[in-house]
Image (cartoon, rainbow over all chains, first blue to last red; front, side, top):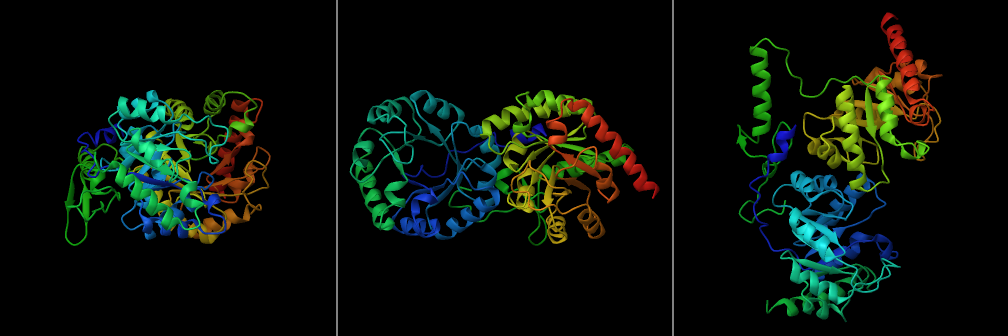
Length: 223
Length: 275
């Protein structure tokens, strides 16, 4: 069935620019509240994309969660972490691939030329490899110390600067980003940011998302 | 997906379910019926082969599931899984299922490519557990979904019409639902108590095979705690094959273990036909 591999030779450029504010989910950070409620509020506040990342869920429950999120997302795009099959089944906008996940071309073949395909990167070289492979954006981390990835040495803004200069694809910074430091991250050259705790743990997720979105919008307006 | 604003409507091929973004051409028929270029090509091939008097291609590989070996790295005692699978294929395994749920996609792809090559060489089926995306990436013969995985009809949309979709089931109701959803075969279990799968549930016994066989017209493999000592009863109850994990993967001599199972299954099927 090798002929299937050539089906998307005429891949078009993504029809929309990559989202700038990403919320990466972890339902354990939501306390007592269902993830879908927190995401719905955050989306109302303003989000570019939600990445459903619940690594312990198998395909069925993950698909159910994806469909539940899709119903509350409005214009916010849904991206599924790792599983291109669940992304396709849910009709998500795309898939986000961890470093040890599927190759970009495999995900592209499954999801089509217009799908939004992200790749995780932890160095300039990994971001360059993602660009070569045809990813639409990279999520670059870990920038600041974070409780979500304990024990990981933060790379700091220098990694954002070096990567943004080395690649043309949008660099989305992740790791300990909040209202206080987001302007500096954008100032270092990031296209956008991805957050977990800053929204999922916020007492008012809509307000947290709105504030982050406002800062990102202000800091990127001149570009 | 991520579509342009001037393409609000997505059309799906009525034959394989792919959307117009996934194929080169989509032809509309009367009403809401569509066919994609890939299905047109497949239909053309079938018609041509019929006209030329050659055997008709079937949409999917023939299902020969006699001894169906499911991989599990944890049972390999440090031996490379590829060596065990190679031995099982020499012993006459009909199908190999890649099951490595805990491994990252890259690692599953690396192992899967080797298993794909080995099964192809041996003329055995290669099935990927749970991940329909990996099944397509590896050009596997099919995907096997459990009751907690993607629903079979959605797995089918991802793997296309020519690949096998197998479903785990432990009741007549779920077997009927799987058949309705387009499953190609059923894995019925756990037949006997097993320690391989923590979430396997209580053993249903060989009676469940007979109960499902009476209501569902699909090939059945029994799974769960099956070994050379009880495989014949599984076939006698109406199964077409036996799926095994530890009986082959943990065996000191996987080739001999597979061969013994194959002999038992073959003669039990003979008995099934005679009876």
